[in-house]
Image: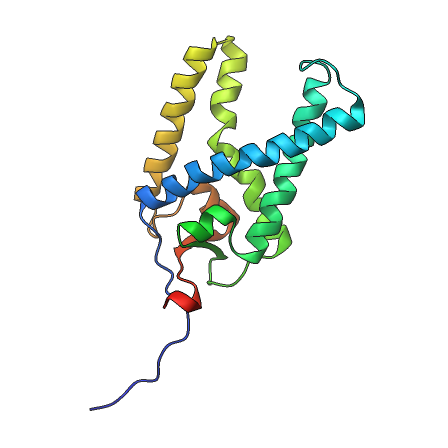
Length: 172
């Protein structure tokens, strides 16, 4: 019987859609802390006294802060939520992301939200209608991953990245 040497390369299998969406929701909850601290910092630095003052500047600031947060952690392989759900982001070949690829993934990940927000702005939809449209788009976007050969989201395919199942060396 011939013995094969162990393969040290990580398996590039995609986590289940359920696990990826649970991670996505958990990431959203963790982002409340990032938004709180960044919003407080912005309001303090700009001396904003009313919540609607400087609203667009604050949104742009949060966009940059989110970009820094996700680009930093994705270039290291995982955010806190991804560690919790044993998910890692890698490039097509299973290697760590570069900062530029992580930034590209961040920009393309806005496809989760921008189309329904654009439709809402175009048709001046109310909050309830926007919520239904946003939830419907997220469900469709997530289900589209079932048609990708490696079960990846469209923004990952476009960015040349992929989400993979990952156990830390201590848990193997």
